[in-house]
Amino acid sequence: MLLLSRVYEQKLAVGDKEAIKILKHISPVAWRNFNLTGNFDFTTCATPVNIEALALRYESPDFCRRSMQKEDEVGPEQ
Image (tube, rainbow, N blue to C red):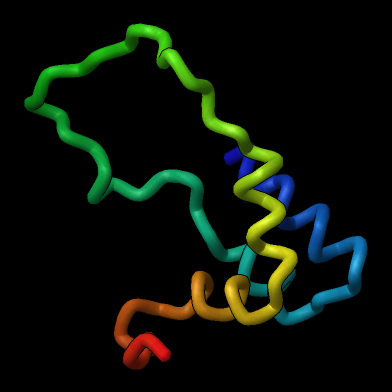
């Protein structure tokens, strides 16, 4: 959710209306990533996730466009 917020703020600052429209419809919860019957590990991670570094990747219009495509719209890697 924090990453989505950072990318939204980033796109808002540069006026990327198409990315903003897409971001408004992305849910931070993807049920396919939940394992309701598995083992859960809530120990602290030795290396925290750098949200700012991840958000910086979305400054690239090409990276942002490719990452926001639906799975069936993604073409071959170039």
